[in-house]
Image (tube, rainbow, N blue to C red; front, side, top):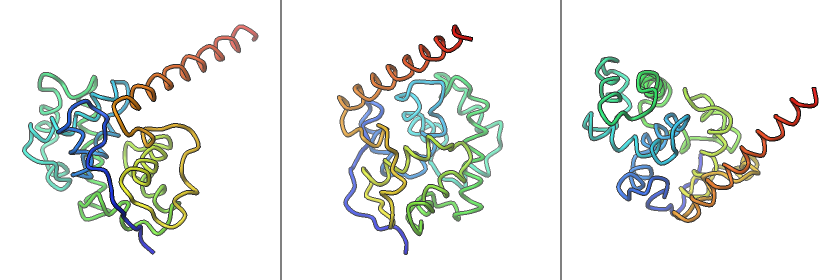
Length: 199
């Protein structure tokens, strides 16, 4: 049985830019590219990247991006302001993501979740995408099920037990989420430092 899709939100409040927030819902590839870019830069910058990339290359189409000359795509990432701190490697990762979507899903990113048989299949499909690791896959599951209405059988079984972007439904909630994440990271660093002193 494939995933059922119920009424979804019209935007994800991740960037502070209404157009970029809407694109994350309107174009499934934008959401996936945002997750690929979401490392070692501010979350708002990562999820604004897909809109700016679309402006620079004309469209967000997995087949087109997969077939692009890598140097042309890298130039789009490097053009000021650069889309990421590491534009070369992120351009390559974005192209690898799109190539996998073309190979495995006919270039249609929504098939990754709309054709999932159950929650575990959904998570496995996400983990199979370049640039999506365990934490990102768990967060994507939360966003897809809680915000975008994608609910294959057993979706509750693969929901993360900790707060994620899937809990964010407003700019204020995003601020609280980011503050909590910073506090959690600081706590982990303190524990690691304490552990190091004991050795």
